[in-house]
Image (cartoon, rainbow, N blue to C red; front, side):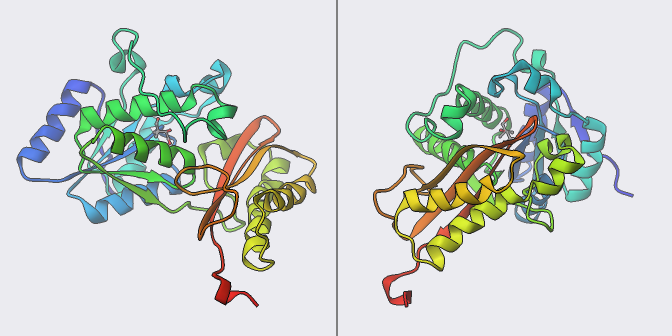
Amino acid sequence: MTAPVDLVTTRDEWRCRLDDARSAGKQVGLVPTMGSLHAGHLSLIRRAAAEVDVVAVTDYVNPLQFGEAQDLAAYPRDVPADRKLAAEAGAGLLFAPSVEEMWPEPGATTVSVSGIAGDWEGAARPGHFDGVATIVAKLFSLSGPSWAYFGEKDWQQLAVIRRMTADLSLPVAIVGCPTVRDPDGLALSSRNARLTPAERAVAPKLYWSLLAGKRAIEDDHVEEPAEVVARISARLAEEPLFTLEYAAAVDPESLETPAQFSREVRLLIAARLGRTRLIDNVAVTVPAPDEEP
Ligand code: PAF
């Protein structure tokens, strides 16, 4: 059995351990998480382990990115289980500081990315991306990674982090990794644990609705973003347990709805299923004119 990964709980020790690794000529890969590791996180750790010398995983439920105190309180936490899982996937170190350790006094600095952070999740959860960008910038500063790994499941988050890293010339390469799904299509998320059995049974319909949008573009050659969104929304509306928050067909980098599709499109969706809010997205490549019938 693999021994649990080394647990670090203070910023000073974390910085020292990673400084030592870099001084020994090792390259550090960072996998920022909020813990409750599932197969999606483990795929990021495995990818990092295949590419870098030291995989540094952070396990910190970041209060700055939660709007509702209830949502923060309900967020699952299990550091002992995370230590074992992270080690099995190839992590070298796990950083699980307390909020007081991260912020000995309330922070006065916010990293705020405008434009791509404004719509979709940004509009549904005001302040969310400021909280994400601020903590990710702080984790980069504490960890000094050459690479940092994030899941594509949170597509807009990935775009915001890429933009922040480019704008601030942070010396880290951002690696986006494919969404991991259950066999029925549901994207893995720590929030799935909150679904009732009845909700879990219908939850994959979120993904299936996105696939209806993908088929509209790829097979039916729908060219209007609004029509694609209508198809996604109609498909989700067939399941009464869901309440749609938004569906969108956007440019994958700017996150804007184009007047006309270019070659690559990202379909986004967010919906409530009982007490749980779920998001998902898929990539679509628009058929070239000579691929059309
Ligand atoms: O995706 C997450 O788990 C979080 O948003 C992140 C990137 C670890 C920042 O807290």
